[in-house]
Image: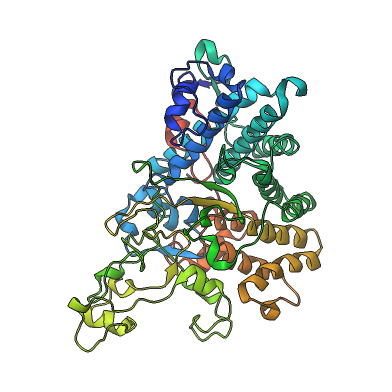
Length: 539
């Protein structure tokens, strides 16, 4: 069996000093001069929490990387290239969304994602190695919770990896004090990885705290693993494996958790007051404007280049600095267009207005084109007058999602593309969507419809939009309406064997390129070359 000592970036002795340097909020104020080894630190309450925070910080680093921050939104049926996605490295987001020849094992961006997930697993393994075999009496309630967090974070990270790459190595941490981490690099079968994921989650379930049980004066509950995240991951992993009854049970348990409450539509993704910590959030990645050098790069990715239009000013209220790397597909909008008139502004689904920007107006008095007034809506005719030849400029005010947008509440300015809003990874509504999928597949269409209708009643404000019966296609479509552009679509399409089909149908930029091999990502070539491991088919 081959060993790899230098492939991952965290090949140094894990110590509390290193970890606290990487944890921006330094929540537990672990003394920087401490030089305990990973296992020793893990057996202290503060040290263990800091190490868990280290795993979350590795995940956070993905959203802090402008080149990969929206990788999970790419390559599906509800997205297309933004007008300026081609400004990105061809092997990064561009390849991930188009599946062209640059989407390959040589991609530095894919390698970066691979490394960061495994780095996070190293942190989780440190806790599990130190605490996993302690008797309950010695472990204590806080130690048990830390162990549950580590199991849950490891399961999350392995789930992300196995979904994308399939046969991946399960790494082990041994002899930390003597040699530093050693990593087993023999590829495991997909079934073995999922077995570990389910084992971790089932071990975590009885010991990890619920959101309501976490003291927010010590750590923000939604920025650390809680039982809600464990249950969502149990739902998702079991759905991937076709264990539909188990998935349905986990989803129902989360739905029943009093820690969570579905929020008004305009409260979920807002920034005012305590909105970022609202009761619908299950797990988020926190950012802090008090630490300006630590930013996230999702806020601007779906913002079209509206300010290139004469007479339209760049303001925080209308999107701030535009970037236009991704944009909702035409198909996405048809899901809200119940009367097929090509206009969603007349629809009763409140998610349209709450989660999207559909139009821009002329608001720059000094640069108004002839014949328009302040407050007029910018139309395609106006764009064609400014740019007579058809090109990407005709898309500069296309409608888009605002789930990731950030205004000036946290100090962001019109000059900044980066921001500090938290990234919602999972929210309570996810349990209703995935629960509906699980129940439908398990033969309980009535319960599936009941769960979907809870979300639709929120969306419509009453029962007028409720389903009276459902097919699986209704679940496919409601998944897009409710969770669209939050990073969950690719894995949903993949596990239902419709990824290639739906991308060919609805992603205009990927449809000429997508093939069956793209149900998996290529394993980084550097890993293959160094270990002699097997590459995924077709790469």
